[in-house]
Structure formats: structure tokens, C-alpha cells
Length: 229
Image 1 (tube, rainbow, N blue to C red):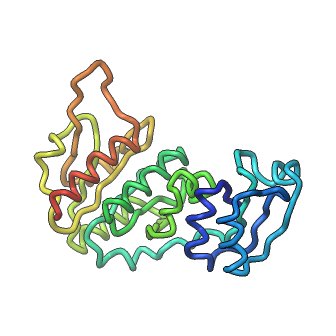
Image 2 (cartoon, rainbow, N blue to C red; image 1 turned 135 degrees about the horizontal axis):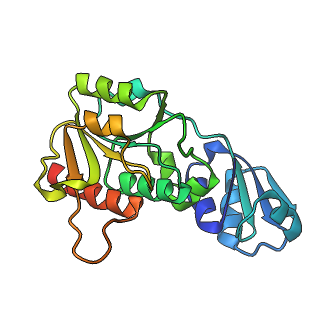
């Protein structure tokens, strides 16, 4: 997997064990990054700008880092945790990256995504998350509904998010909880919504009747984190 940009590179270089090699523009002038790379003794290839442009389609800022593919966490390793987020077929990598960043900042224990019809951890997700994906266990499961049933058996309360529900500030987020964030366009799937113990809703006061998935999830995630302090 190829990741790029100076900020992303700096984040990766903090824990370089997943870095396979680095491609640098031959006139790359960030001496701080170059020194770190040299000190870490990472294989580096100096390239023309056009060569870097052929590797990735984006503003690489003269640096591309090739890393090992992301390793997902087995679900069983999350069952003994107490604060999880479930993404119900999220599709936008920018939303996924932003949610990962919020989860890491709020000390969420892990994220669960379905294998089918869902975004995966890729270069865009990593870049938007500003590298926090490395600190966030993510489990990929075959069936969300069965997973929710398994979480319930382990004592989790399942809290969905939807426009029609209880004011998010009036819900108790203590104990073992799993927040469920729906698809950007369709929201929660019917069966997943039925399995939720509570539905959390953010009151709208203006003309807009909904929020971006990553914005809405951040508001509720941090309310939960605040209560859990």
C-alpha cells in the first residue's frame, strides 16, 4: 500500500516497522524528514517527479511511503473491551478516516466493519486519519447482525444513530457499549436498526436535517467519551 505526503510520512516514521521502502523526489528538501529516514535506515529510492506521479494520484509532496497491508484485528480480541464503534456499510474513505481519527482521540477501544459493501483501510483512509489508524484496532466481520448478537451476549448495549431517536445527550453511555454509525446515504440497515437497544439522535435547529456521517459520529462519540470519564 502506498501512502504519501509529509505529515503522513512523519507519522509513519514514528513507528517504521511497517515501512517497506520510501520513494523521494530527487530534490526533496525537507532535511528533517531526510535525517529521520537516514537514522531509521529505511530503503530509499530517489525519483523524478513524473515517476512519483505514476505511483500515486495525489499531492505526494515529493515523498511516497510503501507500507505493509493493514492487518485487521480478530473480533475475539475486542469482546473484552467496553467502548466500540460499528460502521454499518460506510462507503466513503474520507468519512472512514475522519471517524478513525475521532475514535482514536476519544479512546474508543476498536472499530468493527463488515466485509461486504464497505470501505477498507486504504491510502486515502490512512491519510485522512493522519496515521491514527495505526493506533486503532479494526475488525472486519462477515455478518454485522450476528456480530451484534455476539456483542450482546458479552454484555454490550447497542446504540444506533439515526435522525429519529432519543436526544443523544439523554442516553446513558456507561458500561459496555457499541455505537453504530449508518451508511452515508441509507443510514442504518433495517435489521441492524432492529437489533439496537437505543437510537441516538442529534437535534437539528436549522434548515439542514442531517449531518455528514463523520461529523455526526464525532459528536456522539465524544458525548459518550465525556460521560464515561
